[in-house]
Structures are given as structure tokens and as C-alpha cells.
Length: 363
Image 1 (cartoon, rainbow, N blue to C red):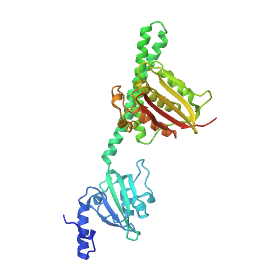
Image 2: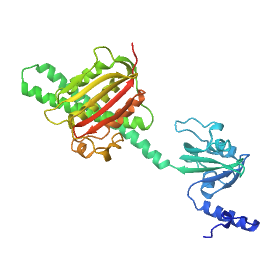
Image 3: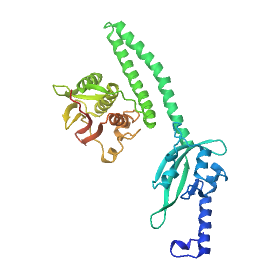
Image 4: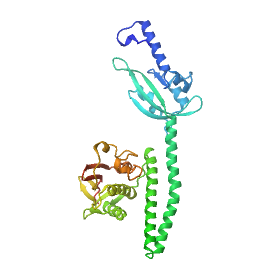
């Protein structure tokens, strides 16, 4: 293919027309819809993929908007000033705007729109270019995955809740008569609770991907959440607790904070060497309530630290314990939904420390 000479120097009219033809041919071969708008909103050029969306009769931005009926993914229509080419003609560069469009053949497509202003040598805006990327199949996969998570949450949680209820009822009715039976029921209960947590983790990931993180925050004392979290872990390992004598106030959703504490303590218990303790401390530092959980494990390798908070990530040591690799990812998202932070504070051959910080709200 001939290289356009005008890139390197001044060309005459014939050379310029050849370059334009070369550029049109190049753009027409792209499967990606591309259109170029003039400063008044007229379509100066549309490649074949773009014409397949609207047909050849559409010649202006307004006509395209009327035909395509662009919507946000929640179904709300785009306002005129929200349209990517309008914003580009105003000087804005638009990247990755998700849109639902109704194409000329009657189908609905999900597109990523990118738009940029075109400027003259003196910087004046003389047009805009709009490029669509069809992500319909990817969007359908995402929707299907969210629906699968939601269905799995319901279909798995219902029998687990029933089993758990009968186990707890049996334990109450048996009392202390049969020690071995009570231990067996306790094991069943613990495994049911573990399954319930896994199901909740999968549902939370689906919710987080859609941007919905349900948090019902209210003022409370974090010391109480720490005490309850330790009680839930008491059967599996020793945990030392160091909290202030006075209240440590913050706004939080108790169930969500319990998720974080359970995840951190469960990780600490798994990685702590036999005969040693997991240390849990709570302090007020610089306007934040800071909780730390320190294990007595072998530490986390440097090349594994970057992936700790990504979904489904597990270190080499963690894989031997099973699980989904979602705990730290979900915990960080919950912390951020509380306007807080969760991070790996330190790690080494003597253990690792994870820290949670929430805004402190004195009574």
C-alpha cells in the first residue's frame, strides 16, 4: 500500500485527493464504526461499519441520535449535551462511554463510544471524530454472569439455611447429653456457615461489578464488632485482642464490617504457625479508627503482594487452603464503601499485618 507523501511535506491537489482516497479505503476496511463530523454537526464521512448502524440516509448528528435512540445502560436516554460527538465538538475527549443503541436493522447493541475534537493548526475546533466499539456480546456475558451469581445465591442459600436451622434446633434440643453428637453437629454447622459465606462472596462480587455496594451505616462502637469476631474464631485458634478502654466510634454497617473482620481473622488463623497467636489491635490514629490483624505466618512474597486485593487471586500458600480468593477483594471494596481503607501494612518471615482504617466519629 502506498504511503501518503503529504505526511512529510506540501502536496498538490491531486496528491491530496489521492491521500483522502487512501484514508477512506483504510477506514472502510475497519470493522469498527467511524464517523467524522463537521463543526455544524453534519457527518462529513462515515465508513462502511458506521453506515451499517444507521444506513446511508443519515447525514447529521441529530438524525443519528433520533435513529439510534442512545440510552445509558440503566435505560435512561442520553441528553443532547451528553452525546459524545457534541462533547467532542465542545473540546472534550470522550473515552469508553457505554451506550445502548437501536441500529437501523432494529437490533439493540451495546457500544463503547470514543470521541475526540479535530483541531486546525491554530487550535480551533474544526470537527470531531467518533469511534464505536461493539461490546454487545461482552455485555451479555456480564449480564449472564450477574444473573448466574444471583440465582446461585438464592438456590444455594435456601437449602443451606434450612440445614443450618435444623442443626441449630437439634443442638438446642440435645443439650449436653451426647458430647460426640454435639461435636458432629457443631462441625456441620461450621461447614454450613462456611458455605453460606462463599455464596455471599459470589453475590457480592456480582453486586460490586454492577457498582451496587449495599451499605447501611450507623454510628457504633467498633470494640463490640471486634469482640464478636473473636468469639466466632475462638474454636479455631487463639486470638489476642488489645482495644482501648473507651468507645471507638465510627459509622459502619455491622454485617459488612463483620465480613471484613471474619476475612482478616480467617486469613490470620490459616497462616499462623501452630502454638502462636493472631494479634488484633484497635487504635484511634489521626482521625481514624485503625484495626490491625497480625498473623505469625511465613510472610507474602514481593511478587504476590500486588495481586492480593484482586478478585479470585490466591498466593501459592493460600491455594492449599481452598476458598475463592475473593475475601480481600470484597473486604477492600466494603472498606472503601465506608470511606475507609484496607491495606497490607507489613509482611516478612515473622508474619504479616493487615490494617483497616475507618473515619473516627467521636460521640
